[in-house]
Structures are given as C-alpha cells and as structure tokens.
Image 1 (cartoon, rainbow, N blue to C red):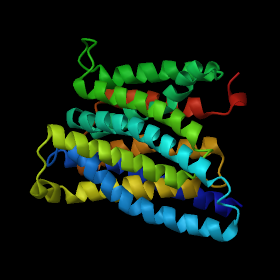
Image 2 (image 1 turned 135 degrees about the horizontal axis):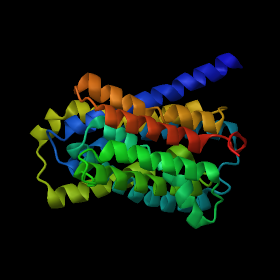
Image 3 (image 1 turned 120 degrees about the vertical axis):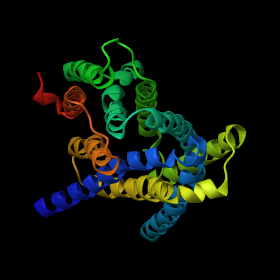
Length: 301
C-alpha cells in the first residue's frame, strides 16, 4: 500500500512539475505570437492528445459495462452544457493568465494563480457552503503574502501583470466550482475534451478578430506551444486523473499545489528570473495559505 501511495504521489508531482514549467512556455510563447493565437493553437494540440485518450478509456469502459448506453442521451446533454460552461470559464482564466505572464515574472504568476485554492472555499459561501475558521486564516495569510509579492514599490499599487493574475485566480476558482458541479454527472476526460474544444474555438475567433497570426510566427513558437498543449493540457491532466485514484483528496491537492513552487524554480533556472527577499517572503505566506486551506477540519479548532 505504501508503494502504491508513493507511486500515485510521484504521478501527481509530475503533473505539478509539468504545470509549473508551463508558465515558462507561456511566457516564451508570447515573444512570437499573440495571446489568443497561443491559446487557440495550444488547445488544438491539447485536443490531439485528449481525444485519443478519451476514445481508449471509453472503449475500456464499454468492455466492462454493457449498460453504458442506458443514460447516453442525458449524459450527452450534460456533457455538452458542462463542457461549454467549463470551456468559457477556462478560456477567460487562460486569457487573463496569458496576458499576465507578459507583464510579470513566471514565479509571481504561478503563486498568484495558485490563490484559486484559497478563493474556492470563499466563493463557496455564495453557494451556501460552510466556511470555517481555517479558510479565513488562509485568506489572511494569502492577503499578506500577496501584499508582499505584488506591492513592491511602497505605493500600494498593483502592477498590471499582478492584476491580470489575480483576475485569473478568481476565474479559475469559479471554473473549479463549475467543474465540481458537472464532473460527477459526466465522464471527466470527455468533459475535458469539450472544454478544450470550446477553449480552442473561442481563442480562434478572437485570434481572427484582434490578431494577425502568421504561420511563420506559429512555427517559431512551436516548442512552447507544443509543451503547453501536449504536456500541460494533455499529459498533465491525464496524470492528475491517474494520480488522484486511491489518494486522499487533501494530500492530492497539496502535491498539485507544488505547481506554484516549481514555477518559481523554472523561472529562475530557465529564464533567470529572480525574486527579491520580500517577494520570496510573500511566496512563503501564499504557500502557507494554500496548505492551511487544504488541512482537514480537525487540524484547526
């Protein structure tokens, strides 16, 4: 059993590593193409990975369950509605994130984005979900951490990139709640496929309206696009599904939240982006908030 948990933990860690490094890919990709072009092409690549995965998993289930067609019509309707809703939320979050990485460092982008883990239970209040003391403690730690991380000039002004990333974190929190509603009703990988398709279509429409994409520029950005699409959206998501099987949800969330730490390391190693002592202190407090909000209820009284 210990070997199994260790294996699952390593799979989840690999997903976090893939997502953390993806901030570098997004930042580098912006040197070649516009944000909507990057989003559109990235999601087309992701579909090329996710669709075969969905087909293989669906065939495996059909072999095990002959009754799979009983609620097919109902599932297809929920899948379409859920996928489109999730896709719209993900597109909004991805757009804010893509603009954000243009104006801030990879490390700050990773940590501010990770604040969705704190915002999810806060937003849950509006859905009449109970919010305990630990959530408000996490909000306090996150607020102080974000102050140190973002307000670096002493004039109490958020930088443009920080505002984009805060908006991204808020929309990601809404996305998590939407996924939480639809995921029990439909197949997870299929939901991801419809979500990704919606994301790709919206990105393509805005790309054609506001940008002038050139094949030469897209080919120049092939590596960051391939990484963000195939690995971050495709492999990362698959690792998450496989790794969470049999794992405690709290433990899984904590491992996946290491994405923010890895983004700092990736920005430092690959792009030579260093954080000041003040910003590092903000990262520590932000990560502490992420940990606190994921602790079991009996840990804090």
